[in-house]
Length: 139
Image 1 (cartoon, helix red, strand yellow):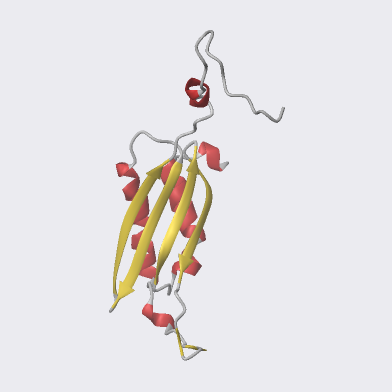
Image 2 (cartoon, rainbow, N blue to C red; image 1 turned 180 degrees about the vertical axis):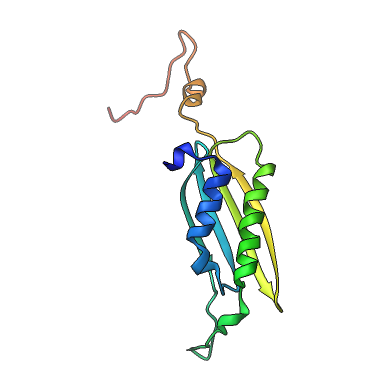
């Protein structure tokens, strides 16, 4: 079955399953889903900020991030959040997450995008009949 034939909720579930290994043990970050015609076209994670002191990268504790169970809960949260998507088919959904002292939190931002190709002809300047338009003097 192609992604176009799947409902968006099933696509989001699939995407989070694909990123499961990368999300496990991630301490903080943002999951980004690009949506076009209600199809996830591109997705990814910006995560694990690397800290350094005096030019030396500090080792991160691998157990400080999301546990397997928290990743599963995050996937369910992402699917459930689609109930708040209203009336748009193109855009982005961003899931910012962090883990502190074993507890995790997430915030969700939905951004709708609209295409101006059809509407652009409505906004073209058309001079009134008999009105002179500016012409470049170099031609």
